[in-house]
Amino acid sequence: MKYIPLGHSRGIILKSDPDKEYKFDKVLGKGSFGVVRRAVHRGTGNCYAAKIIEKRSIEGGHKRLLEREIHVMSRLHHSNIVSLEACYDTPKLVVLIMELVSGGELFQDIISRNEGYSERDAMQYTRQICSALAYLHSLGIAHRDLKPENLLLSDDKKSIKLTDFGFSKEVGDVLKTACGTAIYVGNLFIYFN
View 1 (cartoon, helix red, strand yellow):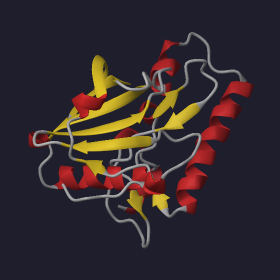
View 2 (cartoon, one colour):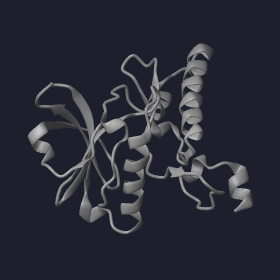
View 3 (spheres, rainbow, N blue to C red):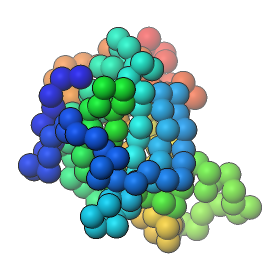
View 4 (cartoon, rainbow, N blue to C red):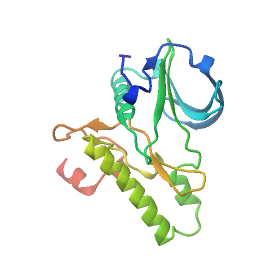
């Protein structure tokens, strides 16, 4: 993995052992390339989400997606976007230490409700999502995988944060690659492709 500096001098890709700085405990989620665990900083006791990826599972194009995710997330500083705190590159693993957002996915919240959202709550979530997207677009970044599974809720369910920047891209030209999750792709995109 190539060296990628993180924004605002928060750090760089660290070669040290993340186990020296963090205690990893309960599993928060699993994906196709790794697992997300809660990470407790040994010095401060602060809790984070650690995306732990085995290098053997990320060859070729998947490695480029991970590098892009790290590069893009390192530039982002917005209240409705999950922040990247540090990244570790070990011989077997890549570990992304990110802000912990523990209210669950918007998707799970939607399907667990017997009733829909109040107009006020729907408006608040929509405003926060649009704020995050406007910020990304002001930096020339397209997320390209916006879906309820990539929106995390705070414990009190009052704020929402965008996550998962693996398909994101810095836009300098017309985007031509089909990506994202098929059931969330817009009709016009499908029509023109």
